Every structure is written in structure tokens, then in C-alpha cells.
Length: 94
Image (cartoon, rainbow, N blue to C red; front, side):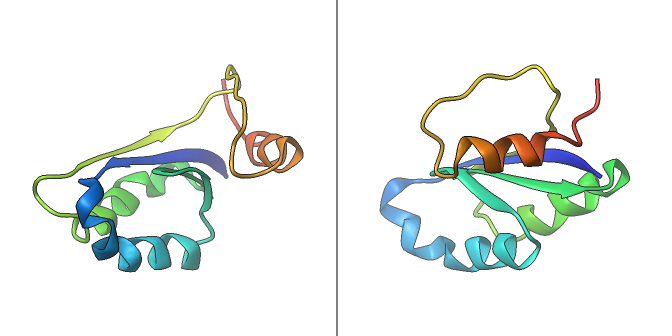
């Protein structure tokens, strides 16, 4: 398992339309770390299907990025504790 970042840009006035996306991310075990950034632990081979499933929920005007996270990172004031984020990052590869 490796940590993947799911990041998206949505029009702020349309945020009410994204509850299905947030519900689906939570159901998959993703953890929200910033307003439009989530981290999920998955097998590296699963990221394409993860992207495809999310891209079918967001609108054409929005942006989406699914990217594997590496060990080199810095953060401040995430929506989760530092210990929770460190635990997610333990599976990061070089």
C-alpha cells in the first residue's frame, strides 16, 4: 500500500454538488487533509481506477489530480493531526 493524494479544484459556488464525491472518498477510506486534498492508502496499481471513478463524479469544468506521495514532504496545519499524517506516510516509497 502507498499513499496517494487526491486533489481537485471545484468552483466554490458549486461545493454543495460534491457531497457524493466526499461520501465516496470517505467510503474508500480516504482522509481529508485540506479542503480539496485527500490521502488514501492503495496499491500503486489501483490509482488509474481510482482516478477514473472520481473523474466520473466531478464536472467537466473542474480539475482532478491523483498522485502517489513520496517521503519528502512538509506540512503545516492539516485537517488531521501530525501523527495521523505520519502514519499515512509510513507506506510512502522513494
